[in-house]
Image (cartoon, rainbow, N blue to C red; front, top):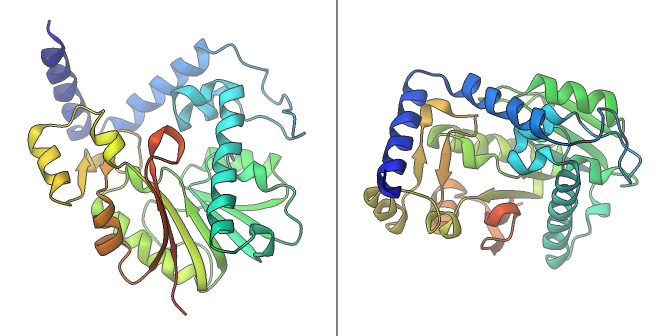
Length: 275
């Protein structure tokens, strides 16, 4: 079978998985298979930072490469450095912030790298109760909570100086994305930062999108595949930068944009809530 034909079969199978609402069990089975194949440290082993490592089955939920412990640690550190650098370029040190939120923290891939922040209240939330349970038991410096797929968050108005969401809006339907941007505005303080990563041109040029999907992206339109499976890795959203700037984050001030700067080549957008 030719490569285009093989991809066509794959798209058909993914379409069926989405329509039958089988994304969660299928994705979970794949993650468990990855974990079983990995040659990993035993559960509970400590990394160089002195904190426990999440078990392989949780790391695999982040992505195939994260099942490997060393990659999980490196990627989390690099993304924490990216957050620091973007804030620093705007004249802000993360150590100066009173409260930050890792929205979609998972099993603490990035969250763990804030353990040494002194005086900053570190929070994390996620829709996966198992992930949050692990963080609560093993990352005592952070306050963590479970949230639903739709808003609201369990926080009061103007609670945070920074909310970052890495590879979160990439897996949400358009309606949910707008709802979560609105909720982010609510929990951010005046002058607070919102940082999100998205799938941009780097991904569009490498993924097997249809001709019509590529054309929509080129027109500045959001392209979302498998919206029924929002909240899983099957759902994939491709964001033209102008869509993020002019529609999704309307009313927020763009501070910085870096194309393909986040893990895996995702675009990064840093916004600030007006006073």
